[in-house]
Image (cartoon, rainbow, N blue to C red; front, side, top):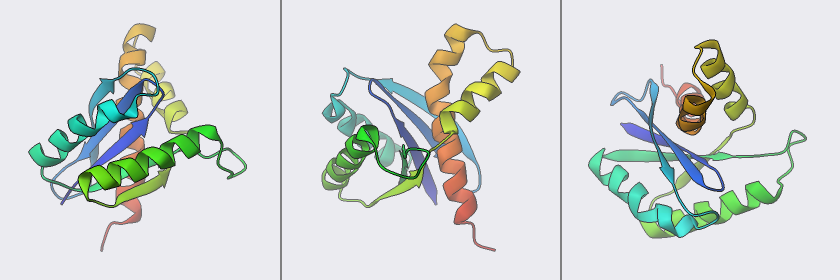
Length: 140
């Protein structure tokens, strides 16, 4: 059963995908869009869901450190509702605190240049989001 993880930013969407067994998350791609124009993401996400036969969609929820919802989290929840309506599928929310920091630190440790880190951080953060979900929901 394949799942995708989504890390929604203001101008980028990081996407990760699981293996067919739902054990391991891998970076998939980053989609760039006009700032705040989340409607631009609906068709590309739908294409991935159909092409990769995705069953679960996990969207990172950017909570504040004190567990409250700020403006980014509210925008993300609005996008979740719109994506659910568009796809006719339930979207699973996953706390994404620290995922971008973890992704950036991993890329720094791997000695990836600043320019290339910027290209990779969103899809890697999506992989962290998805892996947490997969680990939490692993049977056995």
